[in-house]
Image 1 (cartoon, rainbow, N blue to C red):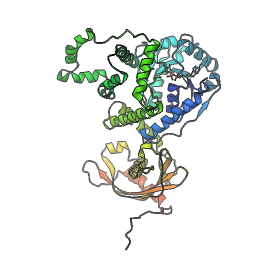
Image 2: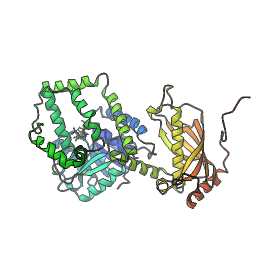
Image 3: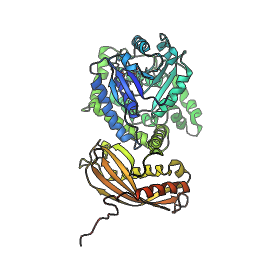
Image 4: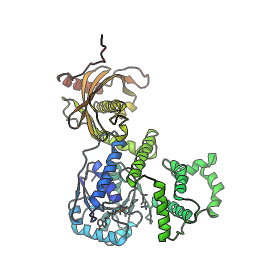
Length: 489
Ligand SMILES: NC(=O)C1=CN([C@@H]2O[C@H](COP(=O)(O)OP(=O)(O)OC[C@H]3O[C@@H](n4cnc5c(N)ncnc54)[C@H](O)[C@@H]3O)[C@@H](O)[C@H]2O)C=CC1
Ligand SMILES: C[N+](C)(C)CC(=O)CC(=O)[O-]
């Protein structure tokens, strides 16, 4: 079922748009139904934001992007889908009506509701085939945040939850199966408690919206990006850990510091006051500007966590590995021609004061192209983990044409020499329209990671390298090979 090609999206707002972006980025076609005449414009804005984010998130090769189409009715959207994602507003009666329309047109697809907290047992109550309904609760922005809470109702077929674990993992997410069905599931139960407290603090004029956010963003929020409440407080107890924490602060829980289940009355005046403070906090920045800032920060945090092999960074690393594995040319690919080793859009933050891709990024692309070529000959993550690799010992780059933010580029790699410990590669970087942008020539030496000294590659690596080198020896030497910066006499 992970080979799903088409998904139906019912409701294309904030969440439906985020799902659409994640799915097409993973190569699936999406058919959207949303009755709002403005839906297409709004969804395209979400997709543009997601494109911008994906250009930065990972260097791994993505599958060919899926297509988005707008269907004129629920029936047409879901007709041949194997997965239907429902993301309509949070009202049980509306969701029931939508499910009835889905059922009338499709009796087999898994229906995954994005609900933030309605129990799946209530959602499936009027379905003829209730077993196929699951909750798959995502987090905004869906195209970046990995968490998805999976919840079964009392009639859900457990096989669909098992399937969903695999499906959502394959599109870069971290499924969290909620073992007990409760309103609000796990994460929103925690978030709501905090939000309610924040509203009380505003209502009681204890703090402004900006002060409340400072109280999170500069302190606990930074911790929460990498450890949840339990592990964070376990560390706060020093050597005594959580036991010491509970001994010292447990009694405070009863004083109590918080107002928990009470909700301030949401009068028009109160809502206006909260809204105005949030507007003021945003200053000149509009919602799209703030979304870009949020996305850039999320990406930076996830990338930092990846370096440390922790939390959401681990999910990103696993996703990238799968993309790299999938992106390697099939064994049957034509290796007799220069090999496509990288395809991507130029991330906006790769450009510099000259408003084009900065020189350092050319080397980054060529280094990634070399990594991709290493995987092609079998010098992949497992090979390196076993103690052998290649080191680059010399590089020559020619910058031939400009390229700007978000423009599509690719590299093609030709082996100039592949013998014994030596591997000499020549990468051409081109714009997707064919223009030659740069070339990179690199000499690499095979090494033992233990002795840090040159050594022979494993037999199968060498024979693959030699095979490609022999094929590429028949090609015309690329223009610029062996060039150095000349000296005028
Ligand atoms: N906004 C958030 O932070 C999150 C929301 N969710 C859940 O996702 C669901 C959708 O929420 P949002 O995307 O935020 O709302 P939204 O208001 O941005 O989008 C809902 C979309 O559904 C469309 N719609 C209304 N009636 C429809 C119908 N009969 N058929 C098809 N589309 C219809 C609307 O035109 C709108 O575009 C809710 O269940 C919500 O609880 C889940 C996670 C986070
Ligand atoms: C506020 N909310 C209940 C809609 C939040 C969510 O459901 C998840 C999120 O993105 O925080």
